[in-house]
Image 1: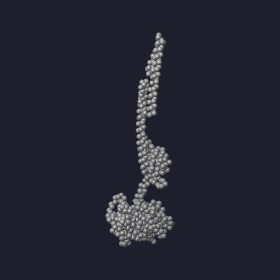
Image 2: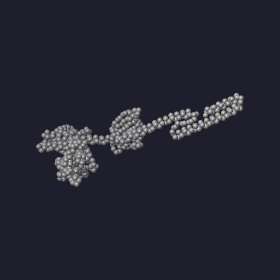
Image 3: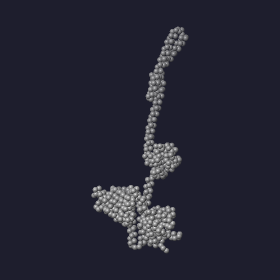
Image 4: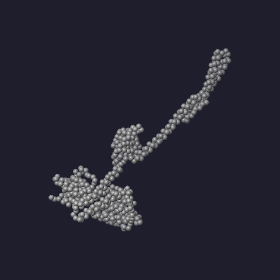
Length: 128
Length: 466
């Protein structure tokens, strides 16, 4: 079975690096974007199995990115995990409508992120 | 005089009797006639005297009437003396009543003056209050108001008195609040509500204090509404909230890297010693970033509260600049930004707090890196004006630039140019701190020049020391 492809979007290069490394070490194929616009383009061209995105990003915020992906049938079904350094949580309407399945707040544990990724992918596979 | 007349008449009647009954009729008749004439004459004289005295009295009364001054009436005529005494007594009593009335009137005049002065004073106090004041009576008519109220609700202060409140202000909610308070029939009640007032220019938020007032008999007499403008307080509270929110975001970001990399090291998730070293370096850099941010926040609040310890010594500004450039170089390298130094020799010195000035320079450099796209150039230049004994530092970039409308506010606390918000995260504190350090701590001058799309130049001017 080909490894699952995960798109990681964050404007903090250190976060991008650490998440990529953790996922690659676990056997995933990882592609990265450093802003919302780049992530949108990559999602459209690469069709990842999962998106991990920061909330606060230049050009396009994490939420705007998810909204745009939802509008296109080709990318509408990409399950998403959102990372946020904001103290607040998005309301459930925003998350449910835009395919955001989990919210993790920064600082986060790469270990916990990996187990969340596995759970979300397993749930997506079961639903398919 | 009356006695004389009476005597005359008595004599006359006696002689008439004797004339009828007597023998020597003729003699008696002559004697009687003489007596009669004498009696009549005396009577006539008495009447004349009486009339004259009466006229004197009437004249005296007229004089008193026209002069308005009461006086005692006098007469030598014994016939009218008791009458005059009685009249004098009456006049005296009337005079006293009038005097008392005049005195009372004067007292009332003074009381009126005092009351008017007190009312004007109270009104002046109400007029001078910056809070809007509306005082209504039991008919919901405006009794008293002030300039602040007229301005807020845009009515004419002079013409509004005694008009129903709903004809003066169009704010239905407020009219209802006043009416409710009046209808509650309370004589001591008080209610505080927050109320938003909309007018053409802006929305304002007021704290409205409604108090029921009572008259002397403790009956409800009306309502006093005092509106305190708390728009600014609300804004400050919002700014504080935003500040806490963005500061916590700024603190979480480096902390997130530190925690994630430490976990990776613990879990042994690195390929080789080189990666391991990279992880340590990330942790170190992010920890430094965190402490810089905390320094910024603390310094700004310390300078603002005047608690900061300033340690000014002759320093070479160029040395400080070189140190800051060294620290910022890795970040610039990451974005392939070219750092150019055009510094004057190090022997020029300024009286400065080294740590603070270093902080200011670092903030300016860090901003330049943030807002300059990849491959750009940042130039750090110093110019010495020997004649004016000044040194000017200019940090110019080839960044996005600042729109002219934002330029006057860039040094304000929490202010961030919206157009460049997407470029970088920030607390809106960095430049505010730089301004404080340059102007408050070092009595220098800060400046900014910027062209959208071309770049910005931030700089400051300090005095050289001997």
